[in-house]
Length: 294
Ligand SMILES: C[S@@+](CC[C@H](N)C(=O)[O-])C[C@H]1O[C@@H](n2cnc3c(N)ncnc32)[C@H](O)[C@@H]1O
Image (cartoon, rainbow, N blue to C red; front, top):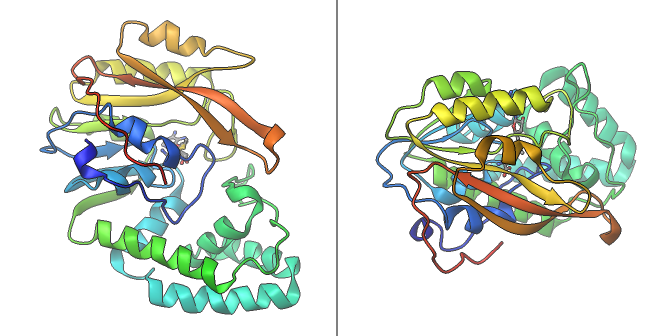
């Protein structure tokens, strides 16, 4: 699929487990004729579909804020011009009032759910985390950089929104707030399904409650799919091996790649992980030159 993504670009949203640095690895192993839909039941930041750039897509996530954000780009409500004004204004208040403004804005977002506030928090919170408490309220602390929204940073974010808008415009992409089970029920044989669920032992929060039962249930449904699929999970880190992978997918073609997940600011907090991509038996492996990473 490399012809679809000569250069990987980063999306406007950040999320733990974001695949920006793994997009080329994933796409190097995907063979799809592009005739059906590109389906992602766990959309997250959207980085994979934005780089694939298909004509038709079904893009779902249980997190309504992610879906509302991309719908706002699709309708034009979220656009680089309005976003630049918004970030310049709120960034200036942040500079003057410091963290109190971040926390005011967090309260405002938790009351009204504006996609602009969502993006502001996503880009001003600690470490680009997306985490919600048991009541579904965004609860990530401030990154402690009151001067966060310098002009160059605003431009970078606006360019990312502009790029996402260009990719979505004129395409048949459907964004849906949906549990993965409902998404998988709507798969047609000609679709290609890319699955990237939360890791089964990490990142538990309101939108990411993911235990062994979820992982087992997903594996059973994925194996019933008639459509081609690629399923991202982890293989091992220095402490553990993912038994889920051996239990369910030992007979499936699986590619692996060493990867560092940046879960902290310090080098010592960066977790080395062997990433796995399980593919449907019909997903023929191709060895192509890597797409340059973002
Ligand atoms: C690992 S992230 C996906 C990352 C994405 N591929 C990227 O590169 O940014 C997992 C996503 O699954 C979503 N999710 C968690 N539980 C879900 C469920 N039951 N149904 C659908 N989506 C779910 C989370 O909201 C999160 O966005």
